[in-house]
Each structure stands twice: as structure tokens, then as C-alpha cells.
Amino acid sequence: MITKEEYTKMKTKLSFIRALFSPFKPFGVKFYFGKIAIGMPYFFPRTTVKDPDKPGYLKFKPKKFGFDICPLGWKTKWSDTNYRLEWQPRISFVFWKWQFAIIIQSEYSDHYWESWLYYERNTDKKKSKTERIKQCQKEFPQTYKWSYTDGSETIDYYKLILRDKYKPLSIDESRDEKLKQILK
Image 1 (tube, rainbow, N blue to C red):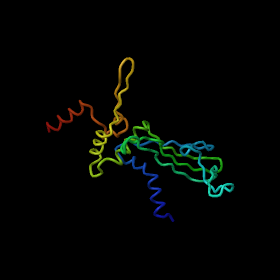
Image 2: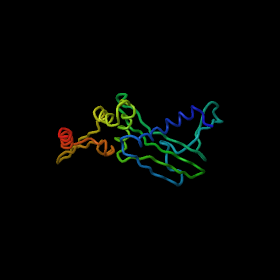
Image 3: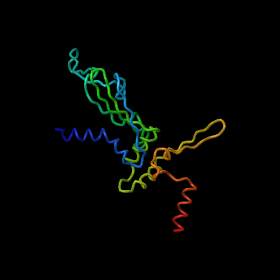
Image 4: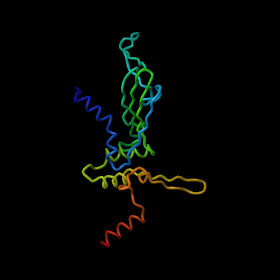
């Protein structure tokens, strides 16, 4: 039977699944089956055992059989709301020299997960999803300007990572929407 502490730990590790029920596009899943090759995230799957040569110390051994969940890896950089993606979630099953891994991926991974973290942790949960996304876009913008020798380009990653229903409107679309509301 699973204890309350184990349940809480598993719930925390799998919290990234909530992104599937958010305004963000569903993430993708990649599968791997073969010899152990997918790290969790920095090392191949391994386990710790007591070091017989150094009492009180632990040493690492390659995992022969087991299951690992690597949750979404992130940190804050300059403030408590400035999120940085470290690694995407993955799940690994190891048996002897073989590994089956499930790797969670999104097309614009840094922008996707950093925006989702802000949405999940720093927006007012009493508001609707639409209002929370507007708050997220205002307080945690994902608009970047790329400069080239022959011009520049501006990219708003919210247009690429949000479901159609929640995408920000262009100036023309916003104006047309307001006109429709007025003329009703």
C-alpha cells in the first residue's frame, strides 16, 4: 500500500501532467527502447549503496532493474518569478542492460515550460483560464525581437504555445472583436 508521503511525492513529480488541462497546447511524447542511453537527467539510471571501503559514505552503481521519474527540472534566476527550464520530464524503466524511456517534449520547450510554470505558480487561480493567460502575458511576456543585418523579426511565443482559443489577438483581430461587441 502506498503511504501518504509517497503519494504526495509522486503527485509532485507528475505535476507537469496538469499542462495537458491548461490553455497550453498538449506536449508531445517520445519513446525510446534500447540499451541504456537516456540520462535522468545528468546520469544514466543508477542507485546508491553503502561504500564498504568508506564507512558512512555512499557510492553509485548502475541500476540493473528499476523505475525512475524525473520531474520537470527548473530554477529561478533573478527573481522568484523568473523561471528557467533545466530539463523536460522523463520516465525510465530499466531491466538489465535495457531501457524503456518516455520523454516529454514540447516544440518550444523553454518558452512553453517557463510560461506554464508562471501560469501555474504565479497567476490568480480564482480567475478564469483566459484571465490568467492575459495576466501571464502581461507579467511574463514571451515576445522577442531578432535582429539581422537586413532587418528584424518579432516573435510572440504565446501565439505558438497556446491553444487557439487562448492565443493573443493581433491589433486588427482585437479591433474587429471590439467592433462585433459594439454592433451586437
